[in-house]
Image 1: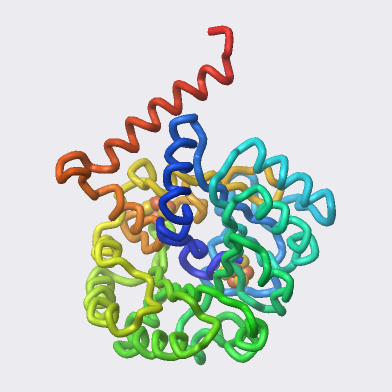
Image 2: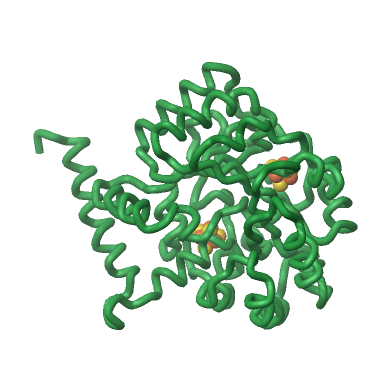
Length: 344
Ligand code: SF4
Ligand code: SF4
């Protein structure tokens, strides 16, 4: 599952690349001409019909057509095909979205331990519409991210049958990150973010809480969208809440970056470091996991703004990280060229 409204839960850099060691591995992959993150729509199916879900927008996959029309796989065939894709793309981090990944929980029961054995951290993004298998608790490097669209009344209306009651039951015994995509409707309720934080912070199995903002396609209009003033108000409301809710995983710089997302996909480090593949395990999703023609100027994806904040850092106070990244990417492109044309 991708979160209904803003492009799946894409974790901040620290979580995505699993700390410093994996950050160096990720950099190594870039120098070799690979993208360090693989985001995989593991199935075309989902029992939910969330308003604003980008995955089922007609333009999500461009000329490849709607996600529901794609061929997808099951059983051992799916497991082996994913492992082959991982072998080809050599990610240091994998995000499994959908559709709803739990539709393929049997396959994931086989696949996740094998990815864990390869030492690759994996995030499964789910609506928690069905129970999460108990055996997943013992899988090293597995992160569960549950998408929740606001407070209970709004969430239940948007995401039934994955209601609050059902989610709470299905998460029992697991450690999860809660990811909320803030829509315009939620942003227009001044106390909603704090109420959300208070509710989910009090749940024992919740390790972290993430917020993204709804990201529309270009030219899209609708109640889900936040206008510029609502975006500023969101940042202002969250700023004082950071110290009060330790489970809120939101760096100060990331919070500020919500006000200045990347201008284009070319400037988006998240898009440039992630290979996104749809349910036929072949069709690329471009320019980022959202697909279609997303409006970067109104992007609220946590991963994108988190990486924007990271790219703007200056090493030694002088060289922006994004310049180092661009230079590494050029080295990687040359390495890729040599691989594909060894005689040249
Ligand atoms: S649960 Fe399904 S319908 Fe809802 S956002 Fe995720 S993929 Fe879309
Ligand atoms: S900035 Fe643009 S390319 Fe990057 S995640 Fe947001 S919408 Fe996608």
